[in-house]
Image (cartoon, rainbow, N blue to C red; front, side, top):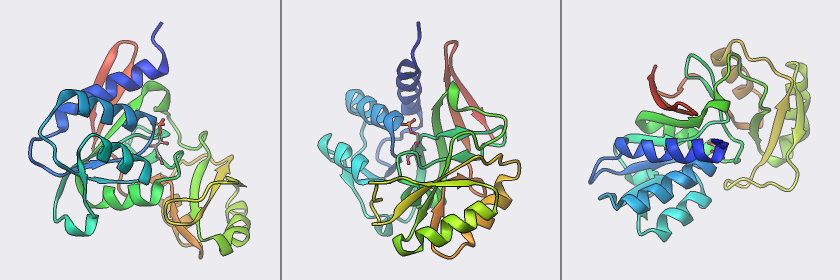
Length: 220
Ligand code: 5RP
């Protein structure tokens, strides 16, 4: 039987086809990305430099000899490879299960091509079954939670988690996100929100979707 981990490994392997020798590579965060970094190490491709969306990925990249650059020192980023918690038919995503959403969104904004690597369980018709992560400045947590509740969600503080930027996460349950671009911008307008995990205005460009039938490459 093919497990979810098998599918993650397959899409991670398949993403190597987007890696170009000599280019700076954008690398996201999560268990699928961890497998991608493992595949990158095994493939011995000529990748010397990357930008990374988390301390976790930075540690893994550094351990395999890839220099992690400050994004401010990078003029162009041809490709960014990252996972997702959910992705819909319009390539809008929910991300942030690994609490790295802010750096992920910044790198996605710079990248020319966002390649999403996901197993088939992540593909949904309507976003929102996965609780939407929202990164919040700590002193604004209760205020932001009240505002999110007014939008119809049920925010839950991810206790014990501090992001790489020193902030906290509220996971918003019970949303059915039929208008992802509007919802992303509405939540961003709440004072105290750093980033929300809807990647809708800037979604993925390519989806590598792993299923028991193999990896499908889909383009927006
Ligand atoms: C981290 C993310 C990840 O891409 C997302 O949570 C998917 O993770 P995984 O590959 O472990 O399923 O957004 O902040």
